[in-house]
Image 1 (tube, helix red, strand yellow):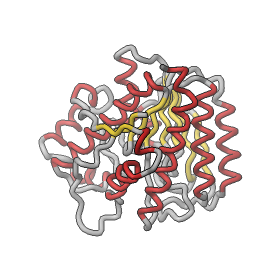
Image 2: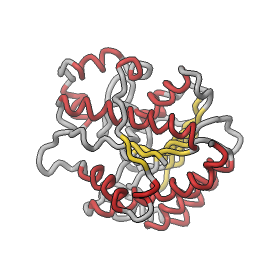
Image 3: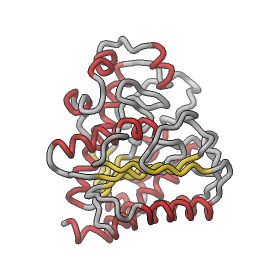
Length: 306
C-alpha cells in the first residue's frame, strides 16, 4: 500500500506554537518501525501541486499573494501560521500528497496521505491551519483528467469541513458529508450535502450510531471515488475536540467508513486531518491506527482493483 509523506518539507513555526507539527515525522517513523506496516507500506515523497492544479479551485490572486510573499495579514491570522516560503512549499506538497494518494487508490483500491485534510481552506483564502484545500484540488484534477466522474467526501474530523463544503456547494458531481462537533470551530458553518452536528461530550455509541445512519442515507449517492478525511481530534483527550471518543471508537469509525467504501467498490484516498491532544504520541497512535485500518482494507479490496 502506498503512503505519501511531506514532513521533510519544514513549515517554520515559533516556539510553543499550538499546532503539533512534530506529529507528521513521528507518524512516518512509527510506520517505519511497525512490525507489519514497515514491510507492507511503501512510503513515497509526493510532487508539489502545480499552479495549474491549484487554480482549478483557488483564486489566482490568492495564489499570487502567497508566491510573492504579500499575503493579507488578516488572511495570515486566519490561517494561523506565520507566512514563509516554507509554508507555501509544504502546503503544495501536502496537496500533491493527496492527489498522489488518489491516483494510487485508483489502481490499488486505497492509498494514504500521512498529512492532508486541509478542509478549512476556501477558494480565496486559508484559515484554521489550512492554506490550500487538498480535497477539492485533488478531485477537480481527477475529474478534469477524465479519471473519475463523481465522488463522495466523508469528513470525520471533529471540525466541520467548511472550506470544502463552500467550494463544492453547487457541484452535483461531488457529494460532501461532514460529521463534527456542532458547537466547535468553525462557528459559522457552511452547508455540506449532508451535515451531522454532534453535541459536546458525544461518546462512542452515539457517534457510531449517527455515522452509521448517515452512511445508510448515502448508499444511493452516485460516486466512483471517495476521499475519507479521518481526524484524530474526536478523541476524548483532544484539547480542541470537545467530543469523547475512545481509541476503540475511532478504530470502529475508520472500519465503518472503509467497509462502506469496500461494499460499494469505491477506491478511497485517506487523509489524516487534525489532532491536538497535548500528548503527541496519542495523536500519532490514532493516526497509525487509521493507517492499519487502511492496510487491512487494502488487503481485502486489492483483488478488485489489481
